Amino acid sequence: MLELRDVSVKYGSFTAVQNVNIDVSAGEIVVLLGANGAGKSTVFRTISRLNKASSGSILFEGSSISKSSPDKIVKSGIVQCAEGRRLFPMMTVYENLKMGAYVHRSHRNKTKDSMEYVFELFPILREKQNDMAGSLSGGQQQMLAIGRALMAKPKLMLLDEPSIGLAPLIVEQMFEVIQKINSEGTTILLAEQNANAALKIADKGYVFENGSVVLEGTSEELFSNDEVRKAYIGA
Ligand code: ATP
Image (cartoon, rainbow, N blue to C red; front, side):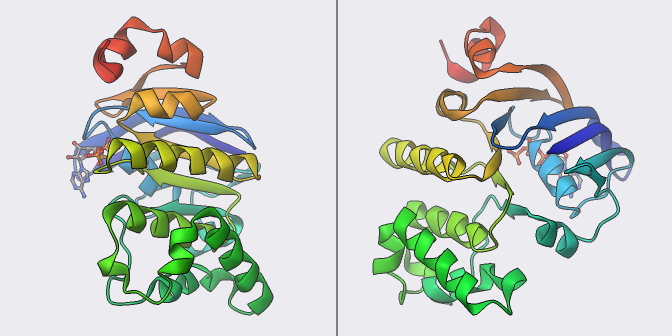
């Protein structure tokens, strides 16, 4: 579904991502692991075309998207749910969700269906639909960020650090919902520092260090790898 071939990304003369190859098949959950600054967010931003690759190519469903506009990429079915939530805090939960459906502007029924789907996944968002997004707890804001991304009916959802800053119990719920979203047909590329939780739901993963992939494998392979355990699982 998504193929990155020898993708490199530079910020000025600094190479943040170097010769990265990633394959995501339809239906999978794939996780990118790595410390802060290893290059995971840069990979996401490059897929969404918020950054330009300095070399290499990116294919989505067999077609190159390396030169598509960010808007076209969303329309083709790739939606990024940003780290840091990037909600509209002074707008209500309902309004934030509606903004997520802008790609289907002319289809009112579709928007309604998507909203109902989001409210079923996250009942608390239905309860709080008239509250300002800025008044929600951290976990609820993260749910809203995922909900807003789902409003665009993505084929592939890019999730950057969905567990960051959340209490352990909420993290567990978050990963359960991610798994549910996936089982209902959305392919997921996830960046996480919480390797333990992420590998439990992922099919496979890539380990990033200093902008390069240093290890890849199935979740079982990575979970039992000594280096991964030492660096990311703490066992
Ligand atoms: P994090 O989890 O902190 O987001 P990451 O693995 O996603 O980490 P990136 O944010 O992709 O890492 O950063 C990769 C490298 O690129 C880091 O060394 C970072 O300092 C650098 N970098 C990121 N954004 C910029 C930018 N706009 N200009 C210059 N350097 C940048």
